[in-house]
Length: 43
Image: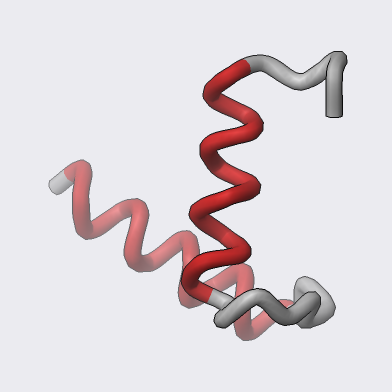
């Protein structure tokens, strides 16, 4: 993780936090849900 930027490390921590510290596979449904949350913040 040394080659990651501070922002990238923060995103990883965020993803761990919302996944309750487990390591779920990035399914299409999960990516769509995450994208929907991010897009709602923009609009």
